[in-house]
Image 1 (tube, rainbow, N blue to C red):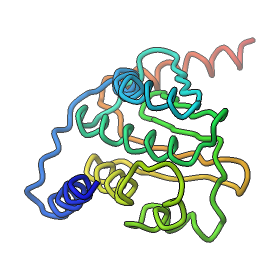
Image 2: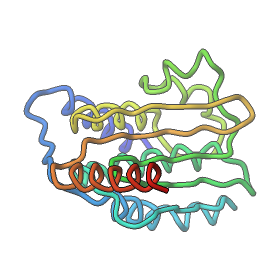
Image 3: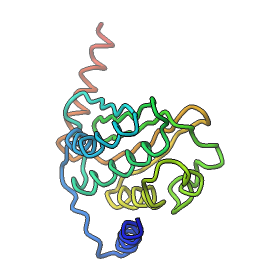
Length: 191
């Protein structure tokens, strides 16, 4: 556990320096999410938590594949830590969007603005399942910022929590989505 904490602290220190490397390229968030889900399937089963995955197929974005797997993994790991036995963690992707939702205890309104701070939520949940170091969400925020994206959280006490990562689309994906939207808008106005 101490080794992992040191590793996470080193990651955060590297992220704060300009020489930290993030390779932006077209990625498929569907592949990213499936890879992360595979990593945590056994852990979810051992916690008696249903780890669900929802995708409509290819979900293009512009980002760093390996760093996005790390982002998804951190979000899933946190969700598994707080979700009670019999609950569920849901991963969903769409073009430029990755969301991880849990059926855990939720967050209070005053906790939402601080959710991505180092150790903030860890102190609240340290008595839960023994995973995490308290740095996962801070790492998520730094990595997503480094990919020109945004990370946000929605929650209500007693109703679970949803973390959403939004990433830019590469030029081809943005054009395809815009064209699909125009076709749909044309159908609505003519139909």
